[in-house]
Length: 148
Picture 1 (cartoon, rainbow, N blue to C red):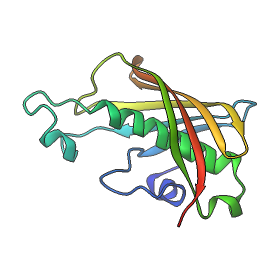
Picture 2 (picture 1 turned 180 degrees about the horizontal axis):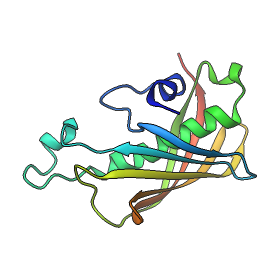
Picture 3 (picture 1 turned 120 degrees about the vertical axis):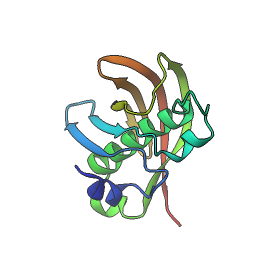
């Protein structure tokens, strides 16, 4: 799934769209998705987030994982009619751990799994990797709401 198709599912746009492509979706019992974000020095947050020692803000790493999970929920769980006017919103973020900084030139691989889905609430476990190194992990809960 390229960024053009991603934008059909997510309302986010530059500079806040944090998933460049989806490379895998598994339709197993616990649905899974793998997405990619290429981090460049041109990201607007690097201008003010530790100039001279640029690192990606942790909240944006978690947001990228959530966006990837949102694609999974919208694409694989909701019907086409349901997702037309729906957006996943954060309801909770638990157990966030940052293991390494993410810097310009890194490629983030998001791996997100739905661990529980009830009606309009999705509980997901997410990990963000750079290469084989774990950079961040978190459990996220999203609620699906109707867009206005």
